[in-house]
Image (cartoon, rainbow, N blue to C red; front, side, top):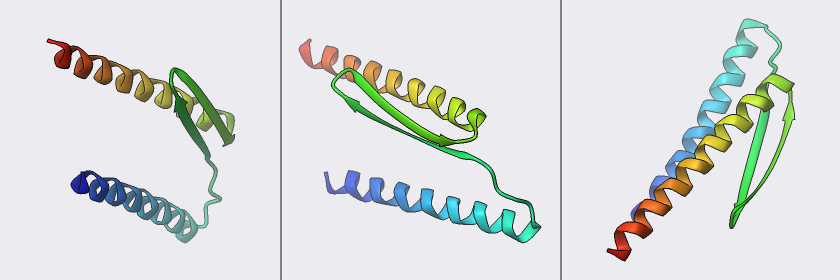
Length: 85
């Protein structure tokens, strides 16, 4: 369990590092940065999604979140099915 916590924290830190690197690289070029952010929380089978920024970025983020939610549901179904055998 402790390994999963360490992996989760490492992924969060990597995400922040990529975010900072992206902002710094666009600032160095003098190009205005545009984008968006999306977040989804899955409570049982009900996804609660929110987003902000450009319409294209939010649409892409929502599509990625939907795919990840379906993948998580499929993985959970496979694990429960394997445990029932």
